[in-house]
Image (tube, rainbow, N blue to C red):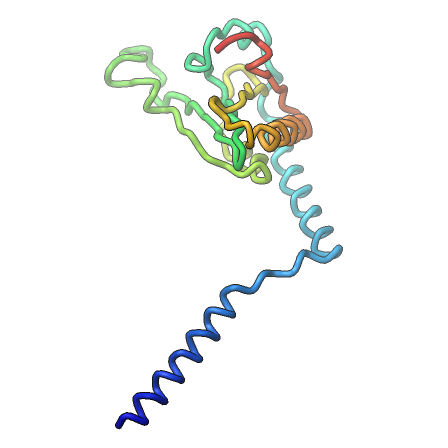
Length: 183
């Protein structure tokens, strides 16, 4: 009986060690062909998003320049962080009447959605925003996250550059909220 228990324990420990080693393996970096395929897929996603976003009218500078705070901003806006971006979207009011607009039964805050998105998936996320959520036209306010640790600032700056490039490639005007001098 003791021999069977020892063999079972030895087998179990060997099996556990094998499972642990299998779980600790790192995947190899992508080959050049895989990198090209990934780049082609990302380009295709950007092309589809660009076509969809072309249905939204060009930005109206007189509308969005009059906004004094991000809480009053009606278009989507992006908060850039170290690991991701937060896409803030104000959905259009489904009720077209003016009765009770902005009141207790139809609060604007209930229509706001905050989505955490990887920078690489920003084009796909923007493509999913309904046309009614763009009252100022194709313009997005971009802000840097507040209270970013000093060690994360270089990554945040790189992400801001990537977000600006993505938005420009999609034909969206970037409104840098920090440069506007508003809070």
